[in-house]
Image (cartoon, rainbow, N blue to C red; front, side, top):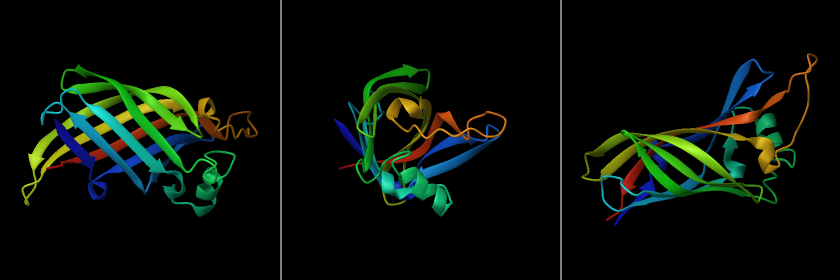
Length: 174
């Protein structure tokens, strides 16, 4: 059994939402942890577990960040963590299709992720590292993030569809 942990100094976990239907606003979580187990060091038979601290959200705008932490969105005071746990992983060529359960605001919903395996390498200190890029989508309202304001054209100020995206470097634990 191979046990991997996220190397946060070489990883980023983020999201993007359409604002005014015309541009994507991106954000990320500064504090998170996660682990991956596999039957071998080649990342076969993966099990993925991930958790992020909602209060660590950053979109490069303090007012927006505070609004995202409020009860209109994540309700960080009552739901300080969000989590993802894989249920199944299938190979699709060199990529992976990962199905799992996302928990936000205490609501659990299925989420599918497309994962590209960047490769496995040794760093200069002899540590085995693996690189993964992931993407997926979810509907924020499915999780109770129900803030709803329309612009003058009748379009949503913030899209319901949220894109999930990340670059993750894993470290094989001894």
